[in-house]
Image 1 (cartoon, rainbow over the protein chains, first blue to last red):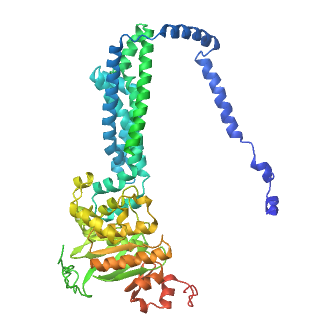
Image 2 (image 1 turned 120 degrees about the vertical axis):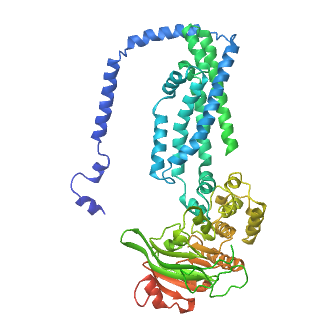
Image 3 (image 1 turned 90 degrees about the vertical axis):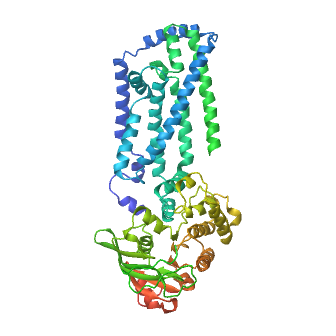
Length: 268
Length: 280
């Protein structure tokens, strides 16, 4: 064996085992240089950062103590956000089932998967806020715009992962159920869904969680919910009310996470 | 589904009146006519396979791996579409069927798989009820609301294969031999005209293999249906089959009772030197 190693031309095997990776070093160096260049272009200087810290301290000071006396206004906004999140999740998850199934390349021919994948790609291509702006422009202010925006976002996420989960199933189980003379939908219900249901519930509860967070934001662009209240409080320099809203949003998100975990455990 | 007859396209077939107690050995339930299969043009996996299967008995199809045994079995229930040739089951030619008619024919053919192919995350009893998917309407499947008679039959069959206590276990909690018993019960749940088995013992230890072969032979006899088994274990084939079909390179090279299968046949089927030193 050692004879074979010695007979190789060039540096010894020990030297070659830890050879420096010049291309990788070049990439790192280029990356570092670009960060420095981009910071310069964007006027990202230490001075600005320090003055910013000062102003931040003033801002934080004005936030305390949080002002909870207008809790009714806040509760209304929070409730609307919650409703937006739940309706959008329900609609998005329900629509993701057929769209994800149609996008699975191991069950469907290309004529079906290509359009289904195009829908998913479209739903994924914009941030929910941009979609919300479009819907607010299209159908006017209010929670419906927020619901539609988050529904579209949910399809983009859940349907894509659902399709990928279906593409990873065992086709042996599918073949066996097909061999019993089951119809296509029979095969889907008894051979495909049991294999992907646990993961689907995982994606869905995660999406509910994320919709809850996004539903507090669509209001900023007029899509309904607590975001609108938050935005107007900011514009009125009502920083103590802003603090109260932020605290209540944090509470709602944490509660949502608890509920999502509980849902996951119940369904699985 | 009794008393269907072959039409004029297959002359000489006697009437098939399964379940009427008038079965004879001459009665043909399944007939393959010049089956050919090419997955790629010019590369034949099956070449001109013509076989008749009577309504009773265990037929073992032996041959080396990659010789088209699995393809042959799957051509029977059209999980694989043959390139040419005919498959006659009862009065129907299956290669011409599509959609609902094909599924109606398929549900009359039970199939057992090498790796059991149970739906792992379903319970044992739900796996058995999968055997009724060709009969039960979709809403009943979706709501898991199976007819009472199907449920009763599933429990009965589960007892028959010795797994009565396992009904609510998930399929992936079972051992290989237990899973294959569930696989057999699922196939019989279809009330099939015949059973197909694709290497049903290849993933099992020798003792379990014998148990599974015994179960398949006996349960088929009880149901009064024939079994067609792909198997590469010649000893098991000799022990359980009433007829052996030897295949090599996609062709039938032997067809006869087990005691007519001689060493020179095995050499022809599996290849090797004339003395066949691998034959035990």
